[in-house]
Image (cartoon, helix red, strand yellow):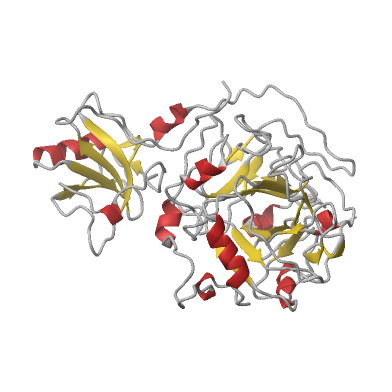
Length: 486
């Protein structure tokens, strides 16, 4: 059974209590099999698309989240992590192709839009911010049919067509092409038991309202604390596969082997400054959804924001040593396609993937021993105001070593590579152009003279620094796999 919704999630904002703010996350951190809620310290069962704070890890605490140096989402006080399964196209020959997210391309990674909505229900409850250490899951990855309860209604899809008539939203995958992509949506439960920050199934400490609607109702006595509501949207570019449908069924499948769409789900690990979120819940009453309309008591903007460039550069390496994007013979993990209607069950297979930091070697070149230079990270550049203002050169044979030697011979202590074949030199890097600590950034262009090396990217610099005169050379630390199972 495929349910059709009469009203889409945007109709949520037509209710009398329509205050909300929307966070369009400009980028995402990584696509990989990681889930610190369901599979702490281990490889998770399926691939997720993950956004939020840069301290995301296979095992993490609230304190870890708050230590993030950046976020792929815009609000600096929010270092939470948000994630959903990744989407794949199932080809006629049995292979799977990762479906790009809206915003992907030219080294960029599109993100998720997260809504925070003040929905007090019929009793006009006092709404609470999520407490420190809080986490939850919405949806069921094993679900393969529609059951018409609030949890099922909270998962929906919008088939986007900006030039045509709007179609009703559905709870499962639509069986027709979407001209401008498919928007997957999940609304989280907003009734908390007031005691547990998590639960064994990561859902039981939360509940949907017992009456009203899944997105605005009266909380049950068992879960009396009404929290602010959160809602995710992510747009996948399914329209890129419009001429590749090959039978009478739609060809897309979630990473956990779900071709029905009913198994869509979302995860949330709280990383907010609680006081700042609570102020927003209490006082940000605009119905525009714009973050800029959330004002402090003095009339200034309540939220300090990362720039779009900072959020887009806030990326992490995939530490699971397997291919998760591109063309795949099988879905990563043990995930056969299961149509239902019975619930899917966890499967076993010869899964040889491991978590390892050896993958970092493809993102920078280690010249600490050979040249006494260290990699400091991926920094920002601006063609109108160069980050590195010394000499420069461009060559079709550019390598990391070529650029370092060029800058070293010219008497400079910093070397930066950009756009595959450009080399820039300087003796200092301004703080606002320096690499963000602990993150990968967008320095993913292969060097023109050695395709196994990375030489910056679009307006980004792979930066190396002379460390011969210091106490030792050490490359920048990117991401973390601390606390993982051996």
